[in-house]
Length: 341
Length: 55
Image (cartoon, rainbow over all chains, first blue to last red):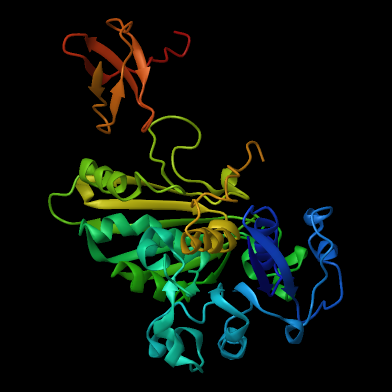
């Protein structure tokens, strides 16, 4: 049994971390930090956790020593927090955007501010088991990728790694409102959000840089907020290299994901759910990936779907923790999602 | 009996009781497949039922 603490526990990703860690057989959830809700019960903010814990949120200054500290604070703030909190735990798992990119110049270009701890960037292993499983086994600094980036990377990785596509790709991402966080601004009131299909990032979304870094492609990404609370779906369009057909594409996906516990290839000829759809993945740690090929046009559409708060955040963090600790990778992450929902 | 799906190359383990003209579903791509040979086992895409629109 290890002791874990969560910083940023009042947010949506933080809440999912608390839910998953409370149900994890090898983890004792020892503390949850909130800068806004110190002293308040955790289950007042996350009512789904009623009956599972009597913990109250604490202040950062009350942190003790833990085996693992998971940080679910915002970008910009985390690179200030992390250096002074590093002494509280041997293993740090960060879910912000601050330690995902290896090049501080790229970070500044996408986030609009200089990195204040560039010397630490090289210490972090991606919290992406499908890309970095071996490195995660001994990692004490883990940076979990962004939700839309995770979906796009898992969709594109087999095609890019096997050089089946040209480097220029477009990524059309759709996301539910929980991706905007628990502290809503005017754009996220019900009146403004309900029914919207809002292209909030027509170009240059931050996750573009993560996709480029992980897949070696040149992505152009748009992001659209849609009528859902949870869920991300990405449609990635690319040009197939000469001679690449559907058989080669399918073989690449099979090779990459046949043994992955949380990636399923969904590219079916029949049925209602022929390609990945986030609706049936709510609460689960699965990412479904699929594809459609137009060989005469040399085009491939790669599709991926996941729950932005689970495989796109807290679930990937726990899966990475399982690998780091040498536990079975599925531990605490078995929930398959709901249907109908 | 092992036969490959002609659509996605998935290997299907057909039971010994499989009969000629039987239709099976590929667990990967969900294509409907017709058994056109037992020895050796051979699958083809099953023809889709045609809609006659009541005519």
